[in-house]
Image (cartoon, rainbow, N blue to C red; front, top):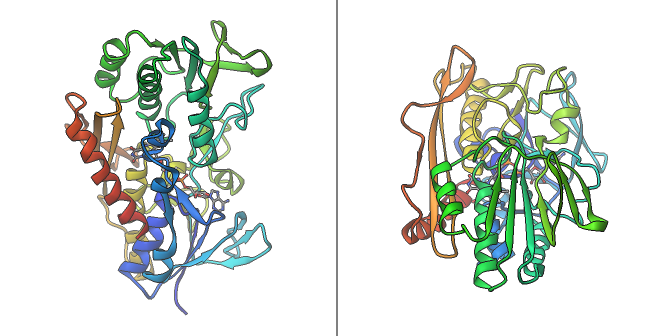
Length: 388
Ligand code: FAD
């Protein structure tokens, strides 16, 4: 019988894996379980928040996976995994058998007392919350206060929150409503592109952005529009609280995090992304914990390493002993300029993790309109390589 690969989650990680397994070996059956009819990309979603792009520009269809590559798509949510009998069960009651299972469910969020993301959106998963956030930015009165909070790393898209702070400040300045953008960072310093963002905060946005490192949000009292922090309460007009993050729920419920409650990400072998705890279950994308940044570009890169390893497995071969992956993030800094960040990772046999290859971590020397243009070419390629 044909080998069966089942994939949970059709984001950048799961879609790329489904496409590449079928493209590289059409003898393998691939079933993708994903409840949403389209994928709404977080990449470029901050430009929907500013109004520079529309939701339709970041909404990607699954048609090509089905028609061009023959992936079977099950529009459902995976709720249970039976690793002994190798079966996945879904919300609608379907049971799907597998030889190899790949989990790519993205992220889940910590709860913050008093915080209801339906009222104060994180917009860290693109979709209705992206538009809710856009409305909030527009609602800030002249001279008003917008507060943003950044969780402890690692979280999805290291430069993303700082990019968002710049774009909110830019929107307020352009609409002559500039008041304050208060940025509360749970980390001790800017996590990614420190040179770019410190410069932007201290020059371009010096009159608007107030940056506070080592600050955590303890609770939210939205009836009084008050955010309680580790150094006291702050009254605001609008807020975007991004909670701490962990592997998608289905990763935790499948027992892939291990027994230590502090473990937030799946423990996997980066040679093939197989769980170190449960055999024949692999985890890629933002849910994995191999030391690599949580980005769509990296999710695409990990998916190709995993696809190659699965194909070799079914052929009775060992995985590539020295895989390499890479990531790029473009960050708009103003309505017309962008910066970028790139890095290459390689396998480190001593730790069994992935490590940055020396001298490959680079950020743009300064934001420019050229980089802004390049950003759309890069995103178009990544969307096409992952989904079509
Ligand atoms: P996701 O894209 O979240 O996909 C997970 C999928 O799994 C979803 O479709 C979900 O519906 C599905 N799913 C979850 N649970 C189940 C279940 N039980 N059953 C079935 N399906 C399930 N990355 C970059 O590379 N460059 C950038 O410039 C960049 N900019 C960003 C800007 C912002 C504002 C944000 C928030 C993120 C940005 N990212 C960027 C990060 C990028 O979006 C993520 O790293 C990427 O989406 C991770 O892909 P994933 O497939 O792991 O997860």
